Image 1 (cartoon, rainbow, N blue to C red):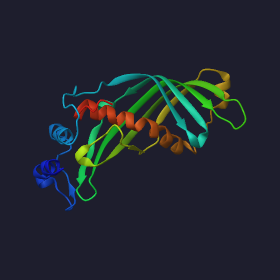
Image 2: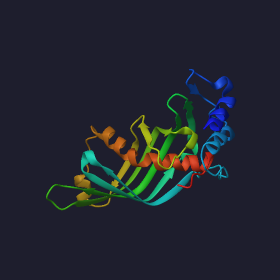
Image 3: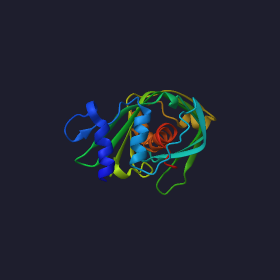
Image 4: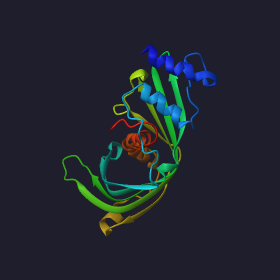
Length: 216
C-alpha cells in the first residue's frame, strides 16, 4: 500500500488541493492517468487509445421501475462517445477513495426498441418503436474504494443527466402510437432510470479503451 500511495504523492506536485486530496495528473495527460491506474491495479496498459464515432450493441435491456416497464434496445447505435473527456480525477488519502469522472457531450443513441409494460395480476403488453435521442451533456462519475487496489469492474458509476434529450420516436404500429404518452412531465425520472443501466457500460468502455484495460 505504501508503494502505491508514494507513487501518487510524488507526482502530485502542484495539482494537490486540500491536505487529504491529491490530484496526481492533469485531466488531459492520459499517460499519467494510465500510470496511476496500472500501478494500483492489475489492468493492462496496452489499450487501443480510441473509441469509434459509432458502435453497435446487438441487444441492450434495461428497466424503469418507476414506470413498471422493461425496455429492450436492438441494434443500439451509440455515437459521439469519442468526444468524452476526463473531468475529475482525485485521490482522497483519508478515505482511501479514488474519484474518476468523464463528461460526454452530445451522446446519441438510436435503436429499434421494445417496451414491455408490466402489471399486477395481468399479462405483460408489448410495444415497438424506433428511437433516436441526443443528450447535450452526460456526466459519469465512478468512486473506487481501496484506491491502491482499484477494481473498476465492480465499482458503481453514477450518471448525471444534466439536460433532457432531443429525441425522435417513430411507432411501428397503431397500438404503440396510441399507447406512447406525449406528456413529458416525468421524463427526467425516466432518463435517470435509463442511465442507471447505461452509465457503467459507457464508463468501462472509456476506461478500457483510453486508460487501462480491466478486461470487463
